Image 1 (tube, helix red, strand yellow):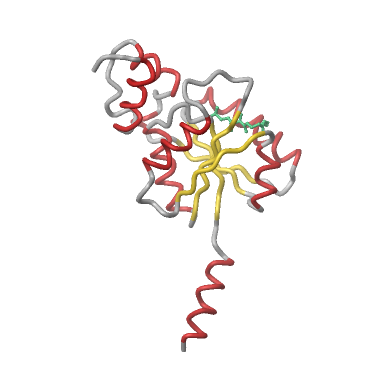
Image 2: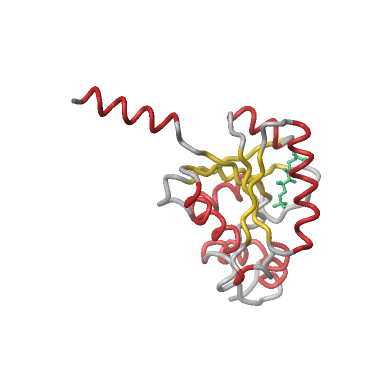
Length: 176
Ligand code: PNS
């Protein structure tokens, strides 16, 4: 009896659908959070992959961004958070994962996303990029916009998780 149960468990594990959700996440917004939860309806597990890009100036270090996302999803075991350096396709190959999840907010996002998806598939033919339309309440949100609002003393309520807003205020020395 126990043996059968073990067999069932292992075949389920083999069939597990895992996708990588990559991004800068500087910082994580409610738009990202929405895509992650909706992504979990399609995939058994999501790896939120924080890009470490030495050329890009970010408000939060890679370690900080990873730590923040881990905190926000601390009660969600299906969300793993890691960082990666270099090409996304190399990271995906190393993880043996072929699916990349990306959110699309507006038509203007599409052109860049389309190029990236094709370039990634050009480098590794097995890679499939799956797009999810951002919920209409978040289409106007961007990490850049939110950083500016909070840095100038505005409220990030409804735009970022409360922890992210706190961390932004600490970072920018902004008053509540
Ligand atoms: O949140 P972002 O900034 O839109 O995420 C972009 C990201 C990190 C997914 C993209 O820049 C990326 O994949 N960077 C890793 C380096 C890479 O593979 N570049 C070639 C992309 S075709």
